[in-house]
Structures are given as C-alpha cells and as structure tokens.
Length: 352
Image (cartoon, rainbow, N blue to C red):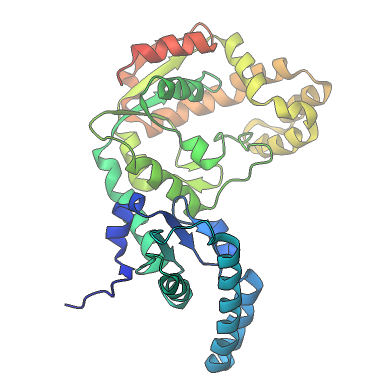
C-alpha cells in the first residue's frame, strides 16, 4: 500500500476535520473560485484567469514551453501573495492548500510555504475530490434526517417561521437562503444573483454536516427547483416522505407580508411586468395584462391579492398534493399575523 507524502492529506480525512487547519487556501483562478470552493476558503490564485488560458493554449502545442512560462507566472504570483499575507503569520500556521485536482498549482504553493517553515498541507485530489465527497454525502445524509416540512400558501410566513425557529434554537434548513431565491416567478432577490449549482450544493453540504440527525429539522416545502437550481434528489425524496405542518395566515396578513417581501418592485414595475409575462401561458393574456396594469398604476395590494387567489393558491396546492403525500395528515398551525411576537410564540410551541 502506497503512503502519502507527509505534506499531502487524503480528502476524506481533511474534509472530516476542516477545523483543524488554520486556513484553507484555494490557489485556482478567481473564476474557478467564484463557481465554487471549499467552506471558508481564501483565494490565492497562482495563475490569473487570463494566465491560465495562455498556459493552457500553449500547452497543446508545446508542453515544455508552457511549463517554462507557467512556472514564471506561478512564482511571481506566489511571491505577491507572500508579500501581501505572510508577515503576521506564525511559524505554526497550518493551512490546507488545494487546486483543481491536487497537482502542480497547489504543489507549488505548498512547497513554497513549507520552505518558509509553515505547516502547509496539500489536499490530495484537490477540488475534484472535494466535489466528489459533496455529491456522495448529499446522496447519503438526507436519509437519516428527521425533517418537519413547513407547508402553506404563498405569503403565509413560512420563511419567517423558519427564522423564528432558528432564533429559538431549533434546527432549520433554509433552502431559499442557500439558493438566493424565493422559489417563484417573482422570487429573484434584487442585486443578488443565484449561486452556481456547485456552490448551492456546497452550501447545503456545509449546512447538513452541522445538523444533528437525532433532532427535528424544519424545512420549507420547496419543489425540485428553486429558481434555476436543483434540490439534490435524495434530499427532495426525504422531504416527500416527511411529516407536514400546514401554516395558516389570514389573507390580509398575507398581502401585507407580500408587500414587504416584494417592496423592491415598487421602484421597478416594468421589471415586475416582464417577469409575469411568463404567466401568460398559464393564466391567459388578458388576465396578465390586467395584473400588469395594476402594477403600473401602483395598486400593489389589490394586485397581490389577485395573484394569490388566481395564480399562487390554486397552483401551489395542486403541486403540494402531488409532491408531499403526508400533506393530508398535516398538523395545522394558525397565525393571526406575521408579526415577530406571533411567530416567536408559535416557534416556542414546536419541538426543537
């Protein structure tokens, strides 16, 4: 059996105990880092986005020339990172360094740090090994979770109840927060694009690994997709098999909550109108044009009430019945309002 060099650590061992490292250093390009990275990682790229393209293109015709040019680029970039970051670091500093698959880029950074005297370790298999572990864990972990599914019509305060439960010490899994999306045609968050699918998976992995499967975990009744992102199949299957809680909120309070959550559309009625163009196939051109006229006139309360009754409620309840078989046995939770005190009181009544 081969033994790893002392500076290399196997992915399962490293990922099980990320907290034992003083830092996690991702030496891939900024573009690779932006798509996804290990939890808490710092980006110290040894090649820029443009430099990697240059080296990769040259490598196809002359690997030797590419290595010469690439080595000089890597050395200069590592020197710049050391100039910028190394001064306050003690000799005992123990970073975990990784690149795409644990090759030359992370090897170069680990070597330089080791020559200084730092306790640097290189992640065997790099990001590719981490990604494989995330996929494996997301396929296996959900089966052990004691999920409690929060169901309810649009605007009934499900997300706010999740937040209230978290404040009371309950375990929650906020899929919409991880996805940066509220899960409907209007669900995009202003100024906050959705993460990549890989980043979404990483955020879920980080959250799931922190949960205690012996305690209840509250999660909202999402469909398989939240905006453009897919909920991992094993997690959604577990949600489908989980007991449901049905949250009730009076219509007036639901409208008020939607006015708060979608207040950004007041400043961008045309953006709202563009989004609901996508509902013409479902609800008909005349109905959608009427909603758009209300938006342009600033009649938001009337508009949201109509959207709830004519679009969200019928579609949502049909979808729930098809996705979540235990809905018929759901425990009913009644809220008079979505005020913080009412949500806190309800949260305190639920097991944690």
